[in-house]
Image 1 (cartoon, helix red, strand yellow):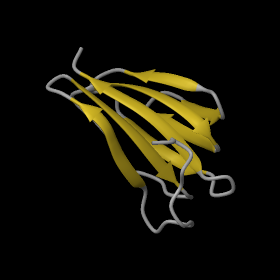
Image 2 (tube, one colour):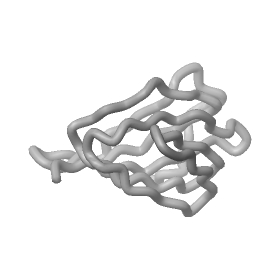
Image 3 (tube, rainbow, N blue to C red):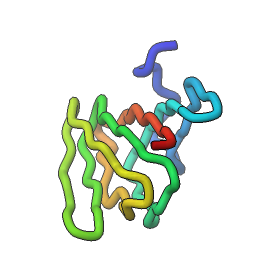
Length: 100
């Protein structure tokens, strides 16, 4: 698999592909083309890398703008949401969820 082999765009919803998982770790590729999210409060911690595109991630106390190559650690139960994703180019995310 190539992480940059993209489906026909634009997408009406984010495309989430589970690349690998076991009982404690899940690795996903997510493709976004302008979608935003509701607030998350997840029990897993998450390492997020933006491989392509631009995005904004909002936390209760801050907002970060991400560009290609940026990454962020999200602690378990740290409320956050994606408030912007570019569509040209689409966002390609690599996310690693794990139990701390």
